Length: 222
Image (cartoon, rainbow, N blue to C red):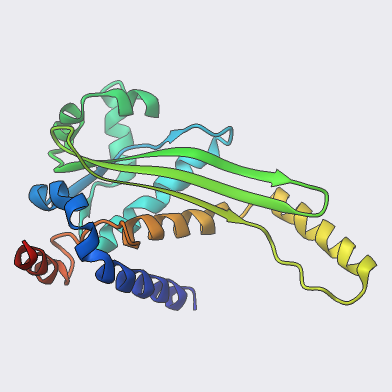
């Protein structure tokens, strides 16, 4: 059931992307010209106070880029090799020359992600979980190819029972449960899907079945 829902999300987003291709083609000219085949995903910079944000987001990114048709270097191997080279902190990695990072792995492009928000705001009767991610893909020489930013929030629904006292208790329990175990991963997956498959999404990679058709359409429109 989860896979079916995910496929439906991808289909709807892909249809929206197809409708918006003409309007977004100029924005993606640099990406089309570079036509990267492999993408190096480096550890995200976490501006929030939750230390789990970096690991959780990093673990979800390769799936979406792989589905788009790109070779993605294994994130655990990347982390180990970067540490061997003296890069232990994400901020240091993001500040390093892109050509140096790309050369370590012979990568065509690099994905940088910054976590601006990874929080769960608790009120007495409600809890709102929020994620805010900024994405950038740059070429091996540092030229920016694509960028996007996604902000998503989640507040648990509380269906009315018709009894005000019961509803208040239910709201308090639901809010406390969300505070104890925030709904980060579903929000993170939704943000990634919106970023890579949305209106401003990443073009299909060379291992995607739609790659040739996509670039034929782009070339025909130029």
